[in-house]
Length: 107
Ligand code: TYC
Image (tube, rainbow, N blue to C red; front, side, top):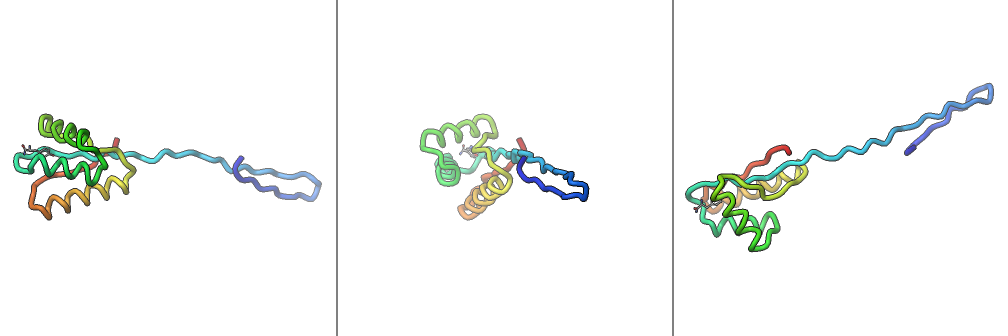
């Protein structure tokens, strides 16, 4: 019982109420990078290091996976964090005039 209340009654009895505590796991979203023919491999590795905190090895593996398979996962986040990552990557790619695409999808 997380919270309760007691209502006194005239006859000396009481009604005890209970508030249920429900755990709600947040919805999770995958952030994905899409392959294209023009964005330099080195730029994609840098994006993965800078915005997804990957070390050089992990960043290189993910970049090559995207290059070879067309799409790959950078990380899994709650909605607001995923949205922020997508915006950061898209702004950074646009600033450097690369066509790199970053999207999110519900898990
Ligand atoms: N295919 C790109 C190239 O050959 C590299 C690349 C990898 C681009 C991953 C985008 O999400 C990407 N230069």
